[in-house]
Length: 262
Image 1 (cartoon, rainbow, N blue to C red):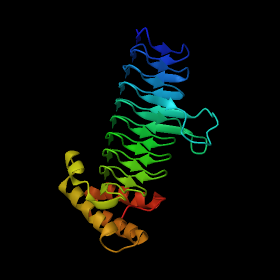
Image 2: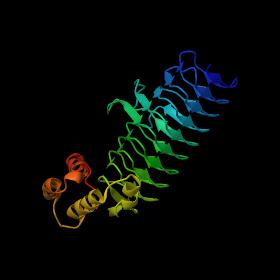
Image 3: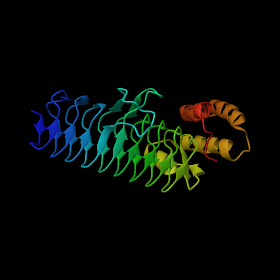
Image 4: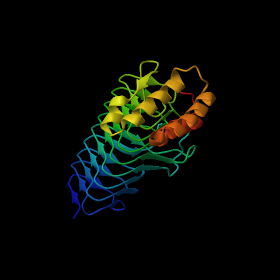
């Protein structure tokens, strides 16, 4: 049966799997749904129209599903959606979406959110990411898979961060980061490819070389973004084993809205 500490307050309308654990003094709102084997520690508040998957762990003092910190929010039934196998450490704040976007804030699967991480309204975070202590996303930020945000990294609203990117400690990010790129600084600047990350994930030598060459096309060749996209398309034909990675970088250049970090 569901293991709920006697001091916890769980609204009878909340939908909790029988295997869910709720710690002391935690509060679960009426529109919350929590999947199997998820553990909610003590002093956690989960509210709003929030759906949480299976095998997640929430440490103490987090606020999950609170209204967005947006003056335009007028109580609309927007949502927060969290996938499976995420670890959410102390004092994290994840907000609902807003009606001005698609109305949903989302966190995928297998993510590690360290203490004091903030996901603002309408953020979309993929899978297998690591957000270190005090990393913060403003509203409408989209983060891909396997991204690492170091401690105290701050991301401006509407920015996009591509798959396998790495954002250094204390970085102030106001533009988009293409896939595989390592950025740091205040303001942020690009400092090459996240080679250590892609090595750990089993990328082949051909794939790593192709990604490095793609970085040179974007950052070192003097090409405009449109010219770089054409060059990347040509490079895909010459590196069939890395075509998926090069296409990922090229497609990102198609959707960047704030320009890329240089």
